[in-house]
Length: 175
Length: 179
Image (cartoon, rainbow over all chains, first blue to last red; front, side, top):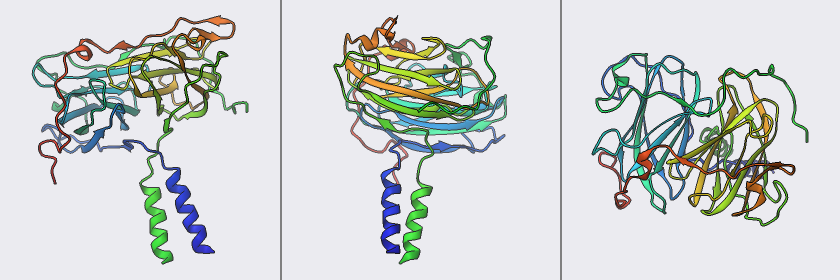
């Protein structure tokens, strides 16, 4: 009886496990200065018409580097700030190099950044890639401006911070 | 034996991703009332951690995402299957974000992110209505039964999303990835 109950619990747990391509990842802050040092290397897959999505942590003021170092097809990288209307995107790090690279220095927000890596075209193409994720102190060499483009910053698309807002509520939604 | 089963239970929990949502696929419906025949998702945005899910739609449909109730002023972002197009919504009707994409540009999984509209530690609870309808449905032209809303179009992030694409290579480990 006890065994059956445990098997049932295991089955229910597996059945309710979500089918995400990624999970929540938190790299440690490091003051090293070589390229992609001391970060996390994520090996991942973009399924057919299904971008790889994960959430990573970073703190305000840090240098955040997300570097697709290898790819089997041309992917783009989108990073959404903890305030979703703020994003940054890169598809090609330079002319002739289609690997995306995002490096944002002096982050504005502490929290969970949503990372989306997707094949740049439609169709049932599966792409495998390697993503290096690192957190460094502001001003670190890992966030030095690329020679071919300006320093990347999160672009706020909607939402007026000056809007008058009500205090936070602790309310249940109506059923 | 029970000890081994216990390990399985533990490993199941350890490998569960801590996501706020999952993959959702509503069925296409030709009904014509607001938010009819879709999915009702009750979500929670933790402090500085947006609620993120992926929803399915086919190219050429009307895709409606409607935050119908909320405890805080939320904003919503939608990213296309190619990570090349996006759209955002805030205060579409009163303080609620509503998107009615018509027609959807691609077939596949769209990434939806919802959070409080500004940087703040507050927690938001909300109800998200997700529906798929044939193109031209009023669900992409009405915010509510009494309020008109223009159908939305996703826009490209930049010129790079329109560049010519190289053919995909056979599925294999990228250089340096083989074990």
